Image (cartoon, rainbow, N blue to C red; front, side, top):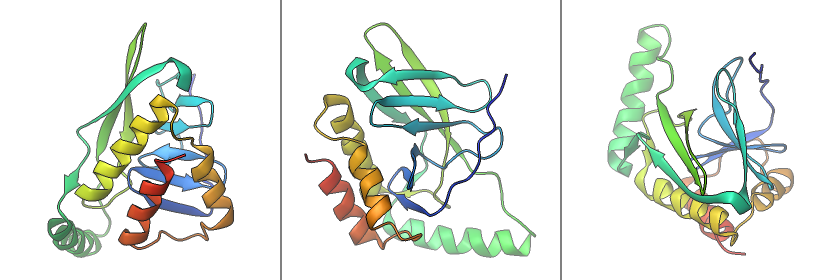
Length: 175
């Protein structure tokens, strides 16, 4: 059995997070039968084909990200422009790269597949701030509700510029 997932709007990409008014995802929001990870105020939900599970924040001991495409700011800009030009010339783009989110509880470790939302990879500074925020979710010193509240009040169907994204990630990591 598989879940069919529909796209929601508006959307913003901030660090590793894809944020809509209704949901927060690590990586891209999965489309169709794609795999992904939804973060809720209650916990972590695996979604998509052959990927199921829910872990309450109180049970999560650690989250770790593996194989995410990360680049320095300069390499990201040059690569993004190059990828866009090549993609347009070739009549399309490649499928997004996949990475993993590992969820560890006292009883188990789950390795979940996530697709990158960042063309050319994530900027190192936002990646690091995102890992910090994930850590704060697991310790209970941050809550996904703040990201959803931001999307409903200030996330006007656009992704903010990098300095604003970094400031948001820092603010969300504090209660």
